[in-house]
Length: 577
Image (cartoon, rainbow, N blue to C red; front, side, top):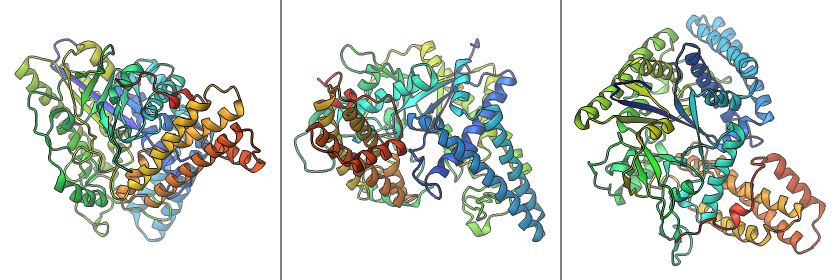
């Protein structure tokens, strides 16, 4: 710990991808995971280990969702990634030959840059990290340099799930999975889409309108399972207009927001609360309150916004324009309003020259926010900066270089302390208990991105399947028959994969709509066929070989969460009062 500081900086990264192994490659499927690993996870590990080698302790808090962790540990991922990297190297070499024939010297040099870049990534993956990215993150945590937090098992959108058993299963599996792969229980959780719901008499938003039923608040499940904190958007803390972090990137979201905005009234802003403080949310009588860290809106926009934030700098690599068939990028942003035809050629040296200025500005912004708060209150506050991990490297190619400099320069500043969320929590020991409303990070701070005219049909199936799973789990969980348990456990896996919030997001953004709809349909079909099979088997009726083959195929294709337990789906451990 440093002495005489004015406050702390907590960088929080959230890593997640839906389950894509054996569910297609390109343009939707396995290549999402390959891209994220090569463009974000390996570069991030590189800068973290470089900082440690240079005498720094990066102290970031990083969430790796359980379903992503399972995929990164899967042997199929290692094989696929190596093949992918070889293809990227080959594509760059072909591009270089083409550009040489066309006398395009700069483009040829960029092609060589990509070739060398992917060769280095392959060496890092095979030699440095031994094909084990999860282990590489674990080693950093074991050495005290980072904190690993968790997320709901398959990134289910918790406020809209209709059964408390579903929320319970998502959280319990998250905790057990993190302990299994990272060696210790997590203290924090990134709620999927930062979506929260307090306890109240809840009426399902889809289906026949019946009398509501009492639901537990999300924070109650966290407290019961030993989780100490979660992250919220600033609008949930203070009210006011929520910031839509993705709305500039997807035209379909702007269309949806245009419809939703007419009926939306932002909550009046509460100026007595501040993102500089950590507060507690009561988890009910006899339960430990759970702390909340709040996203700082000022620093958030500097990194999220492609229009006027750092990634919109004209020198940085453009995300959208690619050279096919290889898919490498050779052009720069030019300006946020430039169309693809107006993009100018990329220059790596010019791009890297911009990184120190952006990182320096960001570090000074952190310091000013902390200084202003310290002068006003004489307290040491925190700037919590949570981002999707894939923003750095994938969306913003130069992002990892930016992160390294920010972490380095914050560490060098004697007035600012770099902290993990847990370490700040332990230092400050917050006592003020508040209530926060239902909501998420989306524009408007509510659920419309995941529940709208395009996605309502998906929730109808999810709600029916949740009830069926609860019924069968409660009926058969005590049975000693292993075959029956195996059928039901695979049904539970299919339900968890069905619940992933990614599907509604992909539908609402129109970014992979057909793929998401097919995945919803597939997991719903698998779930119900397995439930039919379980009921037939339990009655002692003949189950033909084709059905056992179907079970085996499902187990092979969707082989996640070996440690799943039926009791989590059968009943709520601590029923709502």
